[in-house]
Length: 425
Image 1: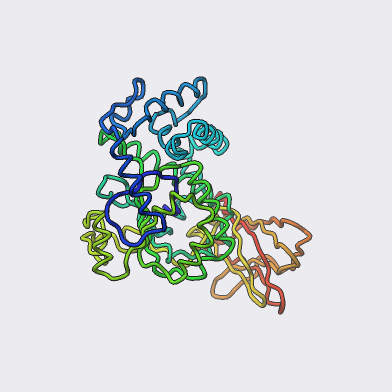
Image 2 (image 1 turned 135 degrees about the horizontal axis):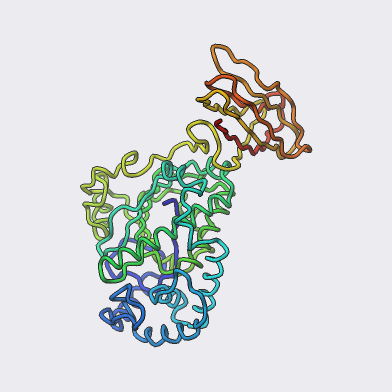
């Protein structure tokens, strides 16, 4: 989940569609030609038996044989199958030299980011549990061709809250996990069905999207995600269905389209806003049993808060008030930032680290009982000090309050990064 899937796909569905990105008619003609040359029943070359049937196109088997020959002696790790080579070959329009360069760069990226083991490290990913409960999107059912369907309601995301509190490297690790999880899931689906299923249909509900979603630091992250998806997971997107297109769509398209492969732009399908037409178009691609009732479907488990997490205001803290990762926030002028930490056992050590980017900020710790009792005296901390660390051993169980105070500043907001942990005896 939580992704902006993209890729370089050379075959586009010939099914009639509503208004699409420019150039769609040309791609549909190309699809017809590809389909005539397709040899869908051709078995995989000997030695790669995981997928009994690949949708080979004319001339691809010979190119795959050459591709494999040029990879002799290369450790391909978990990408040691012909279907992976097929995706990279198609992403470069059958050019073996370009596909080889793209594929070897991908292998280096996998090694650098430890992708082969990322699914085994889910519990160690600081954003994993948090986003599983927050991000309003998930894999849900399949399209009429058997591809995975991913549904997302991006308008419910607190973009500024996520971007300002979560480090970019932590966000990207979560994105990498999601891409690899889907790749492995599609492999499993292919084996179960006896033929290759390696693409995803995305349904993006844009209701609620506004200028706040074009927060510039967020746009920079969108670009990084798009780049990763195109370079590392090509030929993954089947189509991108935009439901309830926002008034700012032309602005967003203009900002992001230069960073997206032209083939991918032609996969965008803007679904009509008229309810009857919208439902009709969605049903062309996805069986209504997988669609919510509001889209003419029969799935009653789908509404936000049931299948799909609710999104809303983003809280980067765990239920007891501790942090999963170095967390950022802006403390406004004349404002305060307070974090409640729940301590269940006497003797638990509360530890903290923090730094203010410029100027200074006040810091204090309180015990929140019938009255607020000061535990660590309020002190002004200058940014020149760098990172401040501290701890307190709880003499009693209950709620402790960590406060960063900027109420004395009439002119300057403060950029704060902090970490909080509990060490239970």
